Length: 305
Image: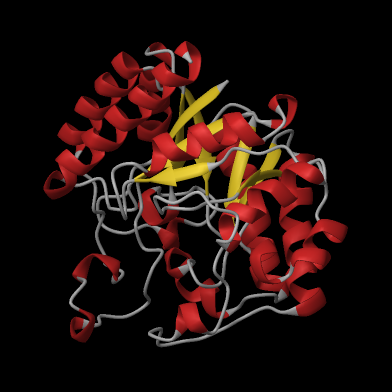
């Protein structure tokens, strides 16, 4: 059973401009890395003690890729640094998994290429990055592609808006999935496209793609579309890693685990993913530690009940 934690090395995934009017400075992209290594090292130890057995690393602009060094910000890790840190993760008994979010809503980390979506140049860059990252991770089991929230509403504060729809969204998703699979990993995505495109999603999404539907509330009633999506995905044979967070409340992850154990087929429930949706920086230390503690508590109840 997977008990995973998602954290960000790069955090340029929310907004492509400075937007002081929103009062949320963290969501604006920055030309420097926002990542505290002391917190990283402390978190790794805490995760290992707490029973986390998988770490999903959202890399973004946080790596100086050999294929595209132009994407790196000040302080980005060179490939050899990433490799040494991944070895540290594995020594603690935690499986590292890469994530690059290719949603057009969350791709500010792609720099200039985020304004070339669905062009030959874009496809070439995506192919290069997927291949390089899989090699850097020494052939990981999974590769998380993101692909969430690609809507006009989610880009209403962006300077540059681009949204793939209809067959183009599917063509690009399947291109990314194919690149992951050609390099020996299994594609993993956020599942929220199913919320508003249920029948199309259930018909066209390959069963090989691991689904992380997500819901961050406290009330696990199928009247909430994201909660019903867990049941729809299960009924149609998809393997899932349900995702919770302490973004909205401190009971969500435990509720997610309880709901999934009660309502989903165990043979298709691969595990769970917890995250905070904040950068890996000192000002969010307690939020990160609380999230890991919530995972440990839910894990204990999962096996004791």
